Image (cartoon, rainbow, N blue to C red; front, side, top):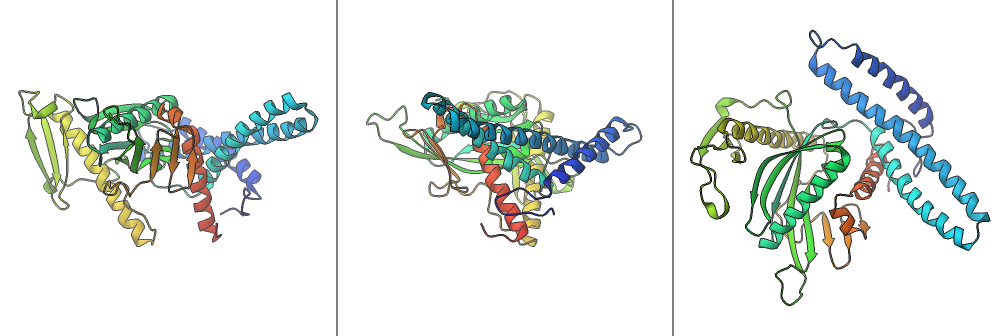
Length: 371
């Protein structure tokens, strides 16, 4: 690990970036020369993941240096500016400082040891917990938020399973997110999300509290976790819509149960039984991989809480307070008064600050530094 001082980057980071730039060129050449007919596909995927990480690191460092230069220039300008210009300079500096913090976290996260899930696509599951119809409506709001954020990032979304309520809420939704950085940016969304707002159906204007659970699973491939067909039970049934009425005359819906654990996944999104089975298997494999990784973490004395929890109102990772336009992430003691913008999918500042704080914590823990 490179040398580190609290509150600063590694003192030899510039040489680390230089070596990373050289390695980036080597990996790029290896990818260009890769023989797809004879080569090991796992090796190619490994090279591609390394390439994406190195490319992001080198670019983030260049962006960080530019922000530093701009801040120095603004500080010099501030000393000479008149009152009107000072306000503009201060506003620009505030934006630059936010960007500096985001890039700080990005770079620290990139120089830390790579997590096994880095570079993987994810499966996101959203379900209302406490709060009835209002929780289902907020589940729909979160689904919309993540969809817009994915669009902003240039990621692709595929709905695997969706069950809606008559009022426009969501009973449950599972969807994949594919694209560079999907897991590393969405991993912190797992847990109980609490909303405080006045429901549209509330006649007396009282604020209600509801919760929604979100799970973010690294999408497992067959090489990550192999499902034994003898340990699976596959049941088929007819798809149902609002109120339980049948929406299909054929048994196209599929439920796959993993007998050793009792875990099951049902899918009725597609008209094809084969397609629904494929979706259920993908989700089941990813859930079982997550369990396996958590067990390995415990063996290494890595304290890790359950991603989702019970959905109880008192057990939450984040609060969305509509009257105050506030979003508070309780794990990282982070509060932003930008709820409206965040719910429109503009999550860069929120996720960037969370990643920065997490990177600091992990880096300090690795080096034995108390925060």
